[in-house]
Image (cartoon, rainbow, N blue to C red; front, side, top):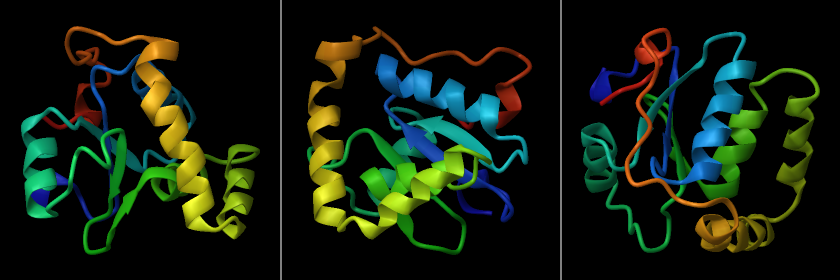
Length: 139
């Protein structure tokens, strides 16, 4: 169980100081009725270890990753769409955007990612999960 992620779960790595990313994590938690996802900030120990293990260039990918034990790591728009596809109706309908070529999806994704601090703000530190949500987060 590398990174302490059970085989039946997926790990969402997000920018812990980004307000948009934190809001997105809260949204996923609220709509993850099947309890499929766990979370860790990219700035956390597990986030840094995964970045190192997968040789991720954080200057090119710095906002969302989806790790599935035994499978490939998903980045950017692919990660976001894979997450949405597991959240039930109507959110899973976002999977229709997989027909859009990855380079186009990622261009839109990168535009939002580049501007996320300007548009949504930035925190001084990563969020601290409430005691009820602590089991969903890895350090």
